Image 1 (cartoon, helix red, strand yellow):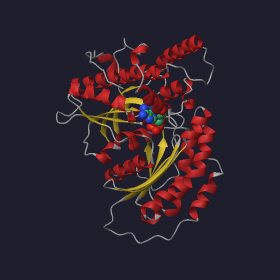
Image 2 (cartoon, protein in one colour):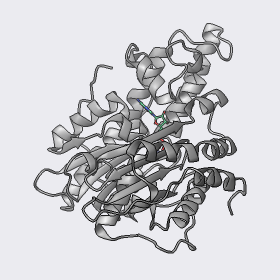
Image 3 (cartoon, protein in one colour):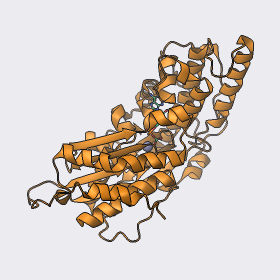
Image 4 (cartoon, protein in one colour):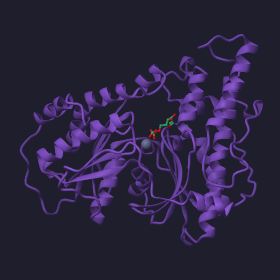
Length: 408
Ligand code: KG4
Ligand code: ZN
């Protein structure tokens, strides 16, 4: 199932290994987390209180920006080239020997098959060599629970995950117990922003050449006039919590084409109204997310799914780094009496820490810890929790209008 070339990475890892130190009984539990589900090779060692002892991250962002998108075989090669070093760096920085680890936790679902395969193969060799338990991790569960490493958030809480690969709303009831309220019907929010940024050739903009699509749109939108373009909000007539972004992208693409013809702009050149398009696109996308989130809050309240005391909305995933979305969601949570929690950007995007923390959560509850790893496989597609999206749709909750007026 896995490419043989990986054995090289594992072998080069082995030469760094030193004899195990005696395990001290008073030492808190320690987990090494490994993330390779998409385009970040991440590793971290954390203890059971959430202290990050050492971490390392190799981002493939620039390569994929240069290529105009993620090419799975390129992502696989870069994971293969970097995983051994990244894991070694995390361990070195932590001062922890492999023998001192309580377990190794690795993302096995969902994600790009070729990327997941590298992390899993490396991890299985590692745990077999060092005779450690293995904890397979669901990437989206890890995004959802990272907040608990930073704040004392009790279950249940509502969670909005918006990244380059996913857009979903779920109720987190326990570490492996989720109700899926809504998800994207086509592409993810971050993917849409990345594609709009590419269509606008933002890589050629002096301030955006090293930024992801979402970051570039956010930066340019700050100086744009969102009212200069009108994009229709998606799915206004559907009273559910699902998302759709492909129609918005189509509207934006048509507007860009029209402006290019008007201005006589060639492919790869920048339009004069690039900031206005960024501002209008960002506003429409964020308003759509805010409206669906508002409905999810009202649905959960109507079914008594959220606690009376301190009901909380957690927002995570790469797009959650966006200040405009954070401020818009604050309007929604203020209006509905929820507490809004967004982890710092560094913990919203993919990293090894979130995987290690999910391993700690599982260790504490004794869930999903494997001492025999023969059966472990990766799963590119994996739903999050129990799907109740049709129940949410049937409830057809109308969201009262909210003034989502934010200065970029
Ligand atoms: O969670 P993440 O690091 O990777 C996965 O997709 O799992 O998210 C990356 C996505 C990209 O689509 C990127 O354009 C978007 O998050 N993103 C942002 C911002 N920073 C990253 N989108 C909007 N505003 C940002 N500031
Ligand atoms: Zn992610």
